[in-house]
Image (tube, rainbow, N blue to C red):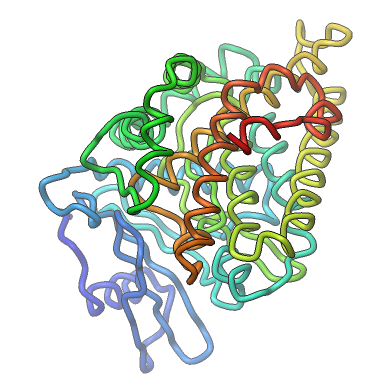
Length: 388
C-alpha cells in the first residue's frame, strides 16, 4: 500500500479490514491536537480503538518542515519494547503498518492527560511512583547493563531516529539560547532573556549537555516524556507517544519528567509547590531503588563490580538535573510553551513564574554536579540565582 493521509472513513475501513471491529454502526472522530500526527478515536458501541497516523511534515509549521514517516514504526516498536518491561504503564498495540505509518492501539479515554488533569485540580497519588518504576524498568532493560554490549548495539539500530532527534537538539539545546525564529518570548521577559543569552558559562554547560544527548547511547528513551504524554487516574498510569524514541543518555527522560513536575506547580505556586517537590522526591527514590534492585539481580558481567551502580545513579541524577534545566528554559521561551505557564491569567504572576523557571533552569544546568546523591538535591540552595 502507498501512503496517504487518512480521513475518518479511511480509519474505519482499516480497522474493519483488520477485524478489530465488526460490521455494525461505527463512528470515528479526529481528536489529535499534537504537532506531528493524525489521531482517530473509533467507536463501535462500547468498543473503542485509537488509530494514530504520522504526517510527513510538522503540523505546527506545515509542509515546509518535512519529516520521515519512519518515526511511526519507531513509535510502535518502542511501545512494544516498553511493554515487555513495564506492561502496566504502556497502552496495548493491536496492529501497525510500516507503509501507511499508522498504529492501532487501545483507547485510554477512561483516563485523563496528566497536564490537563493537574490544571483542573485532579490528584494522581501514584503518578510519581509509577513513572519512576516505568523509567527504571525500561531504561535498565534496554541498556548494556542488562543486554550486554553486543545485543544492545543490535537493538539500538532499530531506533535510528535522526529527524526527531534533530528537532530535540534544536528546540531544547540551541534555539532558546540565542535569538532564533522559533522562540516565543512574552513581552516583559526581554531583560531576563538577554541576561540568559549573555551567560557564557550557561552556554558552555548547555553545549556539554547537548553533546551528551547526541553522543551517549545508554538506553532506549521515550524522548519526549512530559505530562502531556501521560494518561492517568488515581490508580492507573499509561505513557504514550514515544515517537521521539532513540538510544540516548539515561538522564534525559528522567530530567524531562522532573522539569514538568516543576511546571505543574506554577499555576498555583504557593499551594502546589510542596506537593510537586514531594512528587519529585517520590519519583527519584522509586526510580533509584527500582534501578538498583534490577541491577543487583540482573546486571551482566563485568558490571557487577561493587559500588558501580552508585556511580551510575549519581551520573544519571546530575545529567537529569541539567536536562531538566534545559527543558524549563525551552518550554518558557522556546517553541511549544506549556499550559502550566500560559494558563496563568495574571500577567504579573505569569511573568514572575516564567522568570522563576528561567532562573531555576539555569541554576540546575550550571550547578548540577553539586548533587551526587538525592540528599544533595534536597539541600540544593538556588536562592542566589532565583533572587538575581
